[in-house]
Length: 130
Image 1 (cartoon, rainbow, N blue to C red):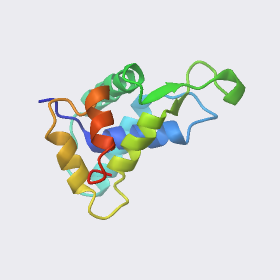
Image 2 (image 1 turned 30 degrees about the vertical axis):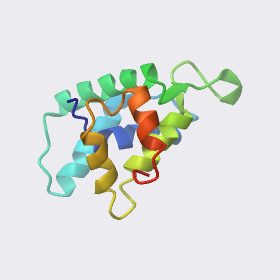
Image 3 (image 1 turned 120 degrees about the vertical axis):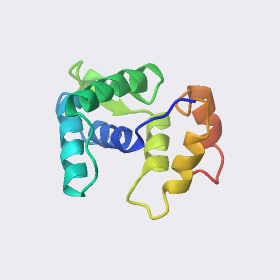
Image 4 (image 1 turned 90 degrees about the vertical axis):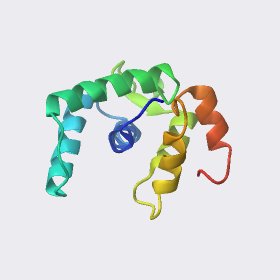
């Protein structure tokens, strides 16, 4: 079973969603995520490890079709991304601003690999996860 840091993935997806005009660099987002956790009194893992994890997630999200390179006609510069339909669905599932978002994350955690495209697409089609 693959375990993911859903909070960090949500943060990265939000940054992709809002990052049309700047290059995507997951390391500062990981640092910001660690700082936010510390402010909330949450234990903070090694920031270097969190940055490495964020870089791995960026690659995984790209390879598995959750994010895609932003086209030049939409402001793409080769270093910025946009959410795909699959990425938008994942962000909706993970959205921590929605009360009671624990159930969708629990359903994701119960999968062998929730970010496997076939697995995720099947799950996101079910009304009870979204």
